[in-house]
Image 1 (cartoon, rainbow, N blue to C red):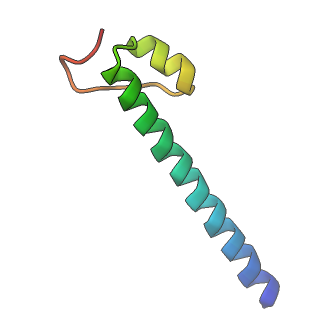
Image 2: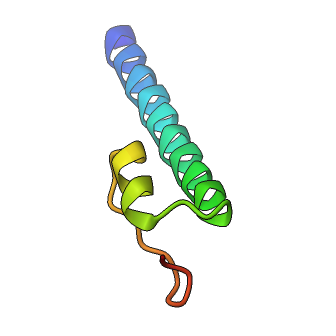
Length: 58
């Protein structure tokens, strides 16, 4: 039973870390956009497709 709990805790921690990485990545993308980076460049740098509200893309 103890191993099952430890495994679940590890999984939860990893999911939390992944969520934190995604949030940081999105925040960095917003900052890059604010600095004038092209949307395509942001997508290449972050490794994720980016979408921004209309009127903000270059």
